[in-house]
Image (cartoon, rainbow, N blue to C red; front, top):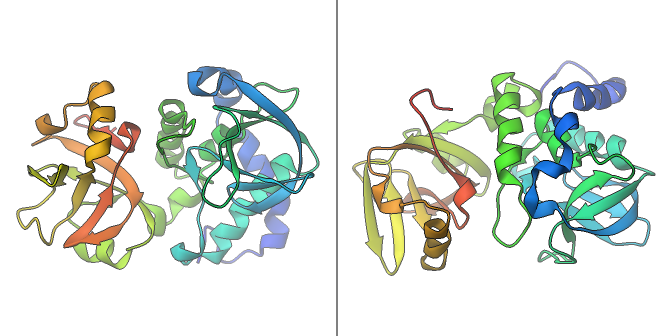
Length: 276
């Protein structure tokens, strides 16, 4: 079940918008200006409503996917959370004009425009920040799009600490790298996993960050050949991560044991002693 299994979604609709708007006193004050990647405003469009928790339907028939985030979906097995997230996005943007920020009219493989989104006339009305701060969305950095990960991760940490929104559910909680059975059962789902890197291997140009002694069975982070330069440019020395505690995020796959492939540095966080 979802966040409040005993309550009907219909009776909660008004409360969703209130949760979004009240989630964080800081996100509204900062606004999109904190993200240099999204400094370019490239379109103003009319939103009709939300198709899902991260897709906006436009009056001209096109769709916009919210860059840098991911919503709960059918693979997560929580229909109530999927509906709540869709409702939250719909209540923010339906019938309103929105501005699209980022790198221009790039599209994803489904033909959706990809952008950071702001309510027109309110430069502090950053849609991604509001929904992440409310615990409605998780941060999902990806190469080739304006992820605004540095700012959005701050909102996500605050939401997780406050157990806001989906962070009340163990289904979406940060998983320990040693929970092999749980991770293996979650193949195909987006997950956030943390643990200590035990060894680093290399084969076929890929780097393998192994989190256990049985590299063919334990959790692994895979860094493909074409992403290694991106990490180096960001000042991340991947081969120096042995013994470091990190938090990785991505879609879980089977690579002997459970694994995530990471192509973007912001998807691999180096944690301090307190796990922050």
